[in-house]
Image 1 (cartoon, rainbow, N blue to C red):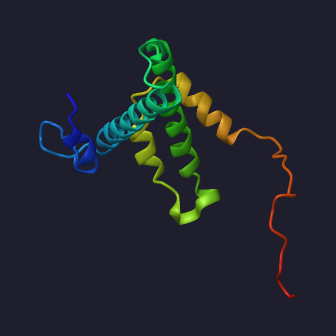
Image 2 (image 1 turned 30 degrees about the vertical axis):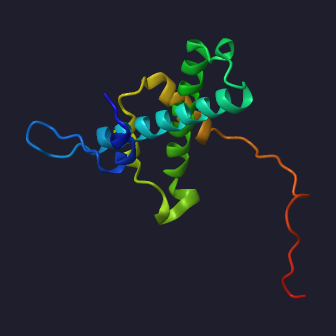
Length: 138
């Protein structure tokens, strides 16, 4: 079970194998799952207390909670894969082997589709109207 102390000290959690060696991927996955779950619990509580005026008939359903938890974990998985891109982040990129070790326990087909989305060829379209104009040379 997870206590408040576990949530507060999530960065200190480690998972070790039978020989005492720290399993970096599993440790990181546990830390991510605990922190994302705690954040979701906090968000749901705030929504219920503030947005739903503490009405018991307006509690979040199990399906809604499950869906939002899966979305949060999926979002984190996507962020990890994106941050492991050496072309975009150079030497600041996350270690690809660590990201692979973290998420290898997740279903391979969902992981591959996410990775495919990030590296698929295509054109990025956007508007530059909101960008601050350059003041260089003025």
